[in-house]
Image 1 (cartoon, rainbow, N blue to C red):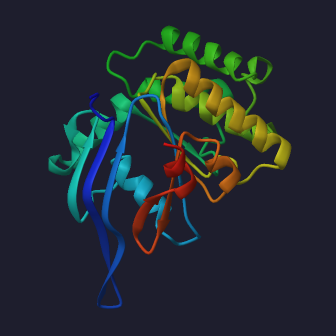
Image 2: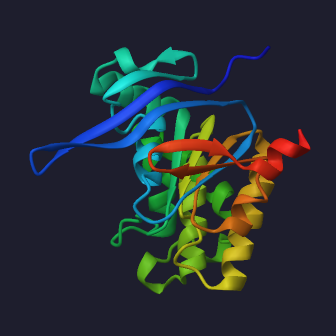
Length: 234
């Protein structure tokens, strides 16, 4: 049996609130394998973004074990977790998170600047290639303020993929987009997932989007369960 890209065992996340302990995630067990499309849904405030932060190594769980790309993340320092993110993980956010003073090309190049032995010409060539793949070859020199929401999200996707990560985490990737543009971005994410074999983890409130994924999990009261309709199809 193949080794999972992500394996969470009894993961719990708690915070102090008004002198009380608030448990946001409770004994989460989850395995995600290479090339999968996985969606996580839940009502507002259910802890979806908290779970994404833990799985993406941005936050350390209060207890439990987390393995990412074969490494025991729960035993690592923040610096070591940052190295895992740099080597293996790309992010796509609802609010795009582009630097406003940089062009589309420069924004896409950013992850390459963090890589060892950064080479400007190589990074520029890869960034131009990725912008072309997401349909933005004519917008390369434009800054985010003159790009539409859909175009900004395409830049964000190109930026997430330029370093060829094994995992892409997308947090409400179509939440700020109109219906037609959202559909275009969804299609792009799924097409790239299938083409590249990159594992895609979507956090979304959109059930229609979630049901397009191979697996759909729902988070409620800090506990994770798989969509019953998908379980019946297995």
